[in-house]
Length: 179
Image (cartoon, rainbow, N blue to C red; front, side):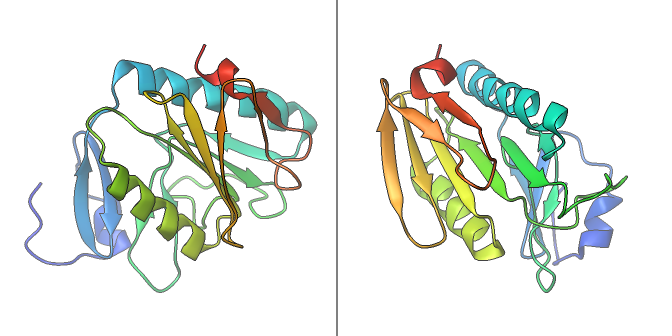
């Protein structure tokens, strides 16, 4: 698909896209496929998150192919590598795009990803109201934690990630997600 003009979310939703696409301010952007290690890392995080939130009824855990409409007034559809939405924010699952920003989003860098692009995506998530973002870097074996209050923390092997009141009771050792 080659975009020659900006499009709405409704137009984007009915396009017969092959591959992974996001809509950024009305422009379709093809995403590069995740590398093996980064895809596996994102899957591990999603599985751990789903195993925690779904049995307890806290909300919904989503894998990398879930598409979120981040803003009411901008044509933006993004797909974090793993994400969570509280049940009180999304009581039922929609058939189409998820009509809100997640409460928690995870981005995992692949070797082909530029860190600057990932940081721009993190900034967009925070602007959209995401309350917690983890930027996972398998090459460095680090996770950078971002919050809307501009608190940033970098965690390494031997430390434990905690989702605080956003996902009560959810924590995971950094070394576990890279195992």
